[in-house]
Amino acid sequence: MEVAPKIAPSMLSSDFANLASEAHRMLNLGADWLHMDIMDGHFVPNLTIGAPVIESLRKHTMGYLDCHLMVTNPLDYVEPLAKAGASGFTFHVETSKNNWKELIQKIKSHGMRPGVALKPRTPIGDVYPLVEAENPVEMVLVMTVEPGFGGQKFMPEMMDKVRILRKKYPSLDIEVDGGLGPSTIDMAASAGANCIVAGSSVFGAPEPAQVISLLRNSVEKAQHTMI
Ligand code: DX5
Ligand code: ZN
Image (tube, rainbow, N blue to C red; front, side, top):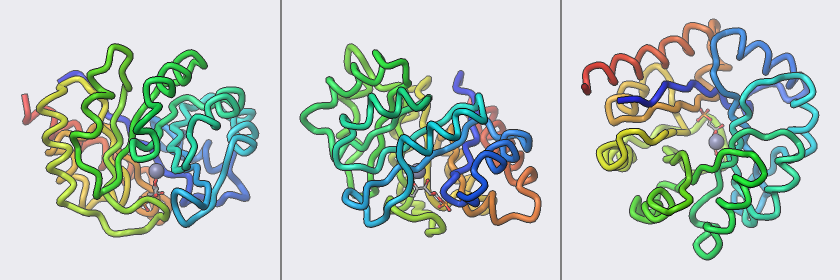
């Protein structure tokens, strides 16, 4: 399998008042990406950050900003987020049934990497057309909790989705998000996930570096045993 492990601490669990130093700390401790949860208080019952905060953070880091759009109208966010310096733009399939082609095209033409996310109750088949399109998404984010908040319990039953995706698309980036940490990573890694979002388990640990490397080792080990 070709897909590189990417460990992405969720900045939702960081100290927002010290975002730049939290970002530096995570990258120095071995994180590959910084996962940025953008919520509009409508698609999910929580409100977090938007383009202005991404723009401020971008002035302090060259790191990959993996933006997860939990918003009702992702199309409206493409331009502002591109200008702000976002790297990845992952929208939810539930919000984009009718305009995903336009969205993918716009995300790419603005120099960002498109991904699609799905909520726990959304069937996996809903994302196939976006992965198989002529102009496809480059990542699928399988939510392993209901989107909206950090610190929730991992849903192991979502691993069927990851397994199906990995079997169908051996070189696709598959991200899991919600409740990932030392006690759940092996389930996700052996199912085939390679991009791992982790908020409370990383920021809440006495030694976040150890958790980051444990997550990475688990993905690498699972990949080697899969071959
Ligand atoms: C939830 C967010 C997650 C969240 C994960 O809606 O998409 O990125 O921050 O947090 P943990 O790892 O604490 O479940
Ligand atoms: Zn997220």
